[in-house]
Image (cartoon, rainbow, N blue to C red):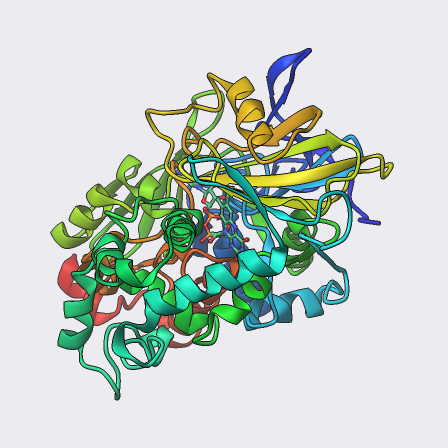
Length: 514
Ligand SMILES: Cc1cc2nc3c(=O)[nH]c(=O)nc-3n(C[C@H](O)[C@H](O)[C@H](O)COP(=O)(O)OP(=O)(O)OC[C@H]3O[C@@H](n4cnc5c(N)ncnc54)[C@H](O)[C@@H]3O)c2cc1C
């Protein structure tokens, strides 16, 4: 049992045939009171570090800072912690609205789960027993039922051929996935050449080696992974994914979509946050940042606008900015961001996913399937709902922009689910990440050519503003693990500069910029 009480957040949506669409779901992630800043007259105060954003990047950064004795302030636009990772509690059932699955290969994440007593509190999605233990493959020319093993073997065979671009399962091009841009085994130029290939280009190279079903599974798996079309997704992104999961398709399901925290991700996020508050973190939620301005002395001023419209300015020696890639264009920077970073932000990434859950009557825990093309691409049975008389199912769509807006046509989601299997839907629960002003997309997956052109720039600091987010992590980018990587690194840098070097001496890079 989670020790937390679920409070209603502004975030999340629920649809039932009777009540239609309603907004706002209860979660352990809501923070009350929403603000805790000891010094009310903020005017003369210069914080050691301000962290913008209470997703996992910001939470880890803030916790590490206060643990090292730094005076840190956390500013968050939402009413809750967790950012793109949060769980809702609806009628006694936990629904993961964003980041969900955990794996022991995510070392930083598992270390946090261990630290906060959650390493054994893990349950499985996609159990093989229960209800309908087969895989429905519906590729437009009719629906077939495959055994789970048949479907898995077909997917693995297609994926293995797909990633075996270098005759070495991707190892020759991406031997060290944290150093994708070049390392002792591969040069930047070699990597850049591969980055010019889209997933469509690669599929065309291997098309004649695949059956029609394998082709369909591969063409749908790419948008399932990254919610972009195979025409746009960089093939290098898939090689990186293959490398991270151990250069084999066999670990794909285990690493990506099997284990989750029983009490939900918001329980872990709350534990990190509460620990930080215990150690002295001050914070303000419902506090969207509008501008980030640095003066000649290297002091950073952050202006926020509260729900009522009043603006406040906070000043700090260092800022850790964890605002996602797609949202950065809404923030005013002075001095402006570099032209290359601005270009990267303008192009953005291509993950425009939809993830939905449904509560369906009866036992459909074994449910699995792929519909391609379809309004929803993949579905997983995801355990019983509270009371064990209905099942929670989880389903993903690729980029449905211009085709299906879940906020305008939620009943079409119900129709799309029926294509996997007949079911009696009691409710649909989701978070529309695309219309959310503080995400505007899913986690970052890059288009062809983007990684080698922009990743290094996105990782650079902007004077005394350290830019940290899972969207440009070196390792598990687009994962919770990547957020934790970024938060920990940024906190280390800020700690060194504020605590040891002295914050009034901007680093050389900042001096030359100001
Ligand atoms: C549907 C979905 C499924 C996913 N599945 C998985 C999975 O199974 N496993 C996994 O490991 N990862 C998964 N991810 C990815 C994972 O959730 C993210 O990589 C991670 O949560 C990003 O953390 P972050 O702190 O870097 O960014 P965010 O979580 O986006 O945090 C940024 C914070 O900044 C805040 N913010 C934005 N603008 C402002 C502003 N102007 N002022 C103040 N605050 C602002 C936001 O509200 C947010 O809280 C998934 C993500 C989604 C959306």
